[in-house]
Image (cartoon, rainbow, N blue to C red; front, side, top):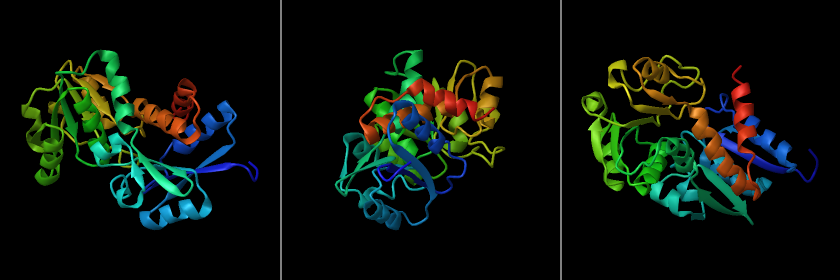
Length: 268
């Protein structure tokens, strides 16, 4: 690091579990980009974004609980973040803050390996910022979307926005789905015993994805695997969305496989 090092940040609460600094700093090293990425536990997102302009921070990753809260403070948003109603990436260009959302790409990229998503019955658990991004991406792929959430108002609102249907979370196990995606933080370290659904929710042959990546195999994924489901861990989404962020931050192609390797090695 020197006086020309470009600073990037992660804003969220909590952030102590995040592998973002490890992944992005490794990518900077591998590509020769003179950058540094730091995590900040942020409660007041408005003041934190003021600091971006004051300190000349060039890019920020936004995580729970701020993906929706940042919207009033960005100057422009791309098409996907507008559709999702959530921002997970901010790029500072001349003290104008541009909002993007790479979560949809992060979730859809690993799902595509199992074939086209058009016509697939997909259940999204949760209705927060990550759920909105994933739902917007799945709508573009022409999937049949169900939103399962504890509160009807928020869940039904998102379902309507993506031409989907709302399902009360406690009744979701009565439905048949091809793909299930947990977009909540339930099961994330340190609360590793929590899970958004009971074990009987899972049916043999389902594809089950959890966006939580710490721990690598959440309780939900363990139980889905025991029931004969194909599971996709949160590292897949995390690395793909992070690679898209890296390109927005630097203009360079991301070293995706090396980013995935360094994150996986950190769990050993």
